[in-house]
Length: 588
Image (cartoon, rainbow, N blue to C red):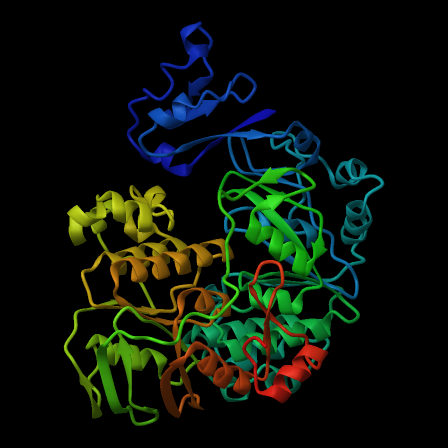
């Protein structure tokens, strides 16, 4: 077994007492396994390191990771950014006529792999001090699919198109009307054709800087698909989109793959299952290393990912499997109503919202589904007391904890400071640490400045902050946003577990079907005319609510026989036709 050492950036940003290695067995024999270089940042000798873990335990800032890697991976290293830094092993290979999915956590090398496959980054094969030439890279991969693919890329025979991950950065790189950005792209589609396919007709004259996240995503998708390329890379193509738009994007990508090579990174497992033909699972440690596995059929790959075990390699990369339940959550509630609402309405001028009367019971977790711009966030804000309804009433005064849709790290201090100021006694309790801090991996963020958190880190802290409140009902607006598939499942299980153990109620607005399936007992369904008139109905029991919602989306779900996870039926398949004819869109 090889030993790999990884040092996080925060190591050089802290005043370290340099006590992290004094008790190392090697140091006590006069051999230094750690040398402090520029600005006091330590450099770990991976050749000398015995993996004792003393430096890891002594470092109070969690800046050091010592990882044992299989010896056979030594010859399969693709890229390493520097000494004691992230390293990537193996590569997926796009296949013509198929959608190749990539599934794995954030910070594990998926985007790096896309840069290499697109030719934007030449892999150094671990030799970061003297990187190999393209010819040497091809020689290294002699006799493999990777060589055949990269040979064409380096020879300029492969045209690539990449849909970037962070579409929210587009306004910083471009300005002016949407049509000016798209009209300069010549290839497969005209501007008029793309505007119809991606529902951009009403946005063409709007300034890019005024677009929402979902609108920016559709513009980025249009800009990518309009290009005439041989290989298309889509990095998280469904973020910011509602379930209607996600299904639409999945269908567009599948049609594109008929005669092209397509690679997709996607965290919504239901959508990945629907659009991908084969999937490469990536395992490893965030910010430390990532290993691509051989591509599998999509069903097998997702089940392996949820189980956390690679049988052919005898590797377990998750402590516990992610489990789904074979039957929908209970609907026969015997608890009393926590609050009820009757005929709520709100008029913003250009947009009006009407919510039919309903009630939320004590201990009930209510999922909220529907297209974007139909008033889901407005309704939640009315329950939270941030917006007053123009008509109707909310019966019962309850303590509310609210995690908003858009969150910012505008707190001046560390995550620890923020949580301690909220409720020191509760956040330091063994219960909260075991049920929230650990599952959400917030403990690794405690010494980070809140203003420096990434979107996913900020989301996890915001969920923890909401659960830290003493409330009767907890309102979560899109808690899965910015989270990878693993973090989404952990967040859903955390919210669900906290509601059950505390006996409190919850309301969760989200677009990820897996997330809602894990966390919800009942369902509210929103519809109407997006952007103009929203209509909210429910809560319904889970089966009735999902049937009502999926009928509008025109997709059906079944349970996977092995993992019991929800799976979208292939359009017009036997099961799809049978369930639609029976009116059972949510599990037959």
